Length: 192
Image (cartoon, rainbow, N blue to C red; front, side):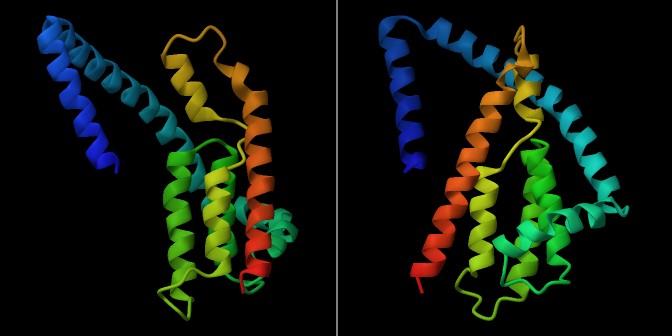
């Protein structure tokens, strides 16, 4: 649907700019937006490289194993179908940690890796397992303690207090995760 709506909006914008005599302003705004997008991408690239590197270092140390042990009671509740000593727990833990640190872009490949491992063990390849559905919802809610990406965006756009969104982010993401997990557990229980 969006692949239809966006071209329509763009065409309407061009037509309106031509008939209203604002074609020059449209050209200026296009180039200004492209410049802003490139600057924002470069600003975010540094943040993403830093945190992705830290996550890779953490993955190669015993830090992940210790965090997995700490998260194990929660993981057992959220993912009861996964065997207790499975390597998938480490992959899911890394994904959760990346999300908690607000590293959505670093969490995505980790989540895909965990999802691939779960799919490898999935008997019915055409249907998501309950654990796979739980991981999708958990990633969508993504509890964030340090919303680094949003802080970096706000900082690059000149916010006077880029960290002022931390408490609202905590409230929003915790509520989303709790209600998401509640809904998943209900659908798993009554959807069979």
